[in-house]
Image 1 (cartoon, rainbow, N blue to C red):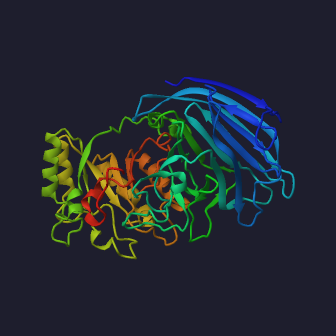
Image 2 (cartoon, rainbow, N blue to C red; image 1 turned 135 degrees about the vertical axis):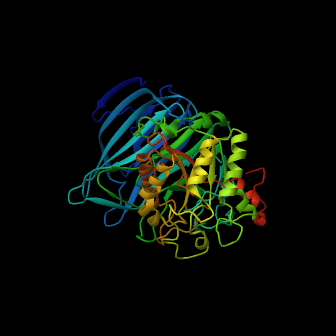
Image 3 (spheres, rainbow, N blue to C red; image 1 turned 90 degrees about the vertical axis):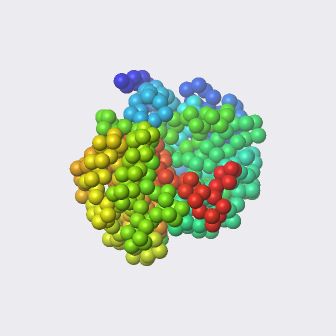
Length: 512
């Protein structure tokens, strides 16, 4: 059941006059409760800027918004506002699985239509949404005469803070989120020296930047979390730290293969830049801002997927008693071992069993430069009888969860997905754990860049056509896409339990 109440008001060049540091006219949009207020205005050079306040407490001071392109002049100066559109929405939508059944999506929106007063007189829109639990803004690039696409070199969305807040953060990284969390004052963020992952795909960024979400607590107890929503056909965003200015600026993940951050055909919308705001930490957990800023469910009925607890053949590999590959002589994914795990799962009411290392190719994945074509996703090792294991599991009330490790060679996976998902359909498997261990092939692409963002989405969309749910390992971060594609069920991206099996860096301390 979906209840929608919508009021749309179209205003043409109307400003609500207010105060800001520059003394300019401002346009205002407030959250439904009135507690959160976004002010938009143009600086004296015609550059767009905004502020955010909560109950009259300034949360974000005057912050700029501009872009740099290849083969075009930068965008963000000499602008004028030619119209403003407003909309209020109050609706409910149903979560097929997750934290709650019905989600309220209630916000006020302001769309600022901008145009250059010089040069090409390009047009550009900025969308602002004010919720009771935070705000989001995004950009819309419109059609241009004689130009069919844009190449973004840098997006410069600023978040200027109003104090030296307590911060919880991990270093900015183009490939992983598996760093230890740090708790410091904003001015003590040192992402360059705090890189603390000894894994297979860490990226060294020579800038003091943090991954999102980054969480903060102001002196008055107000909690903030900075992130993004609806990351679609765009590069992931890190946040560059300026300690002196108490400021963060968006820093997009790049592509060394192409030498830019994003390439998009016109027209297009960027992801939402988000700030969740709560008077306590619990409010951040309860917030639905991120999922609400995504599009509605495109898949419809999800009754084929049932959330469940699962266990797996994988921990033995991490502690060294078993191995993923057959040649080692201690292969873990055998028919015999799988049956032992199925018996345990059935006895303890655990409904799923993940089996890693079942398919050929594991002898040639870690440490090899050329990993294209290493794995296929339908051929089991000779000591693993997939038909026998699946039949045994079904008889015990346990579903086998498929494992597809790509070894960070997504083009190989692209070629085999249809066949691999068809095998899952044959055996009645409804969930797959994908993996992307290692440096991305082709060289110069990164896990969190636009090229891989599009690959992750392709997997979700193709899996959906086969009624398959996806748990991605080495993923792109969660930006609420599960609302649109509810078969995106989970991610294994943070530094988790497996690190406690490895003595090289002492595991995970309580602080983490």
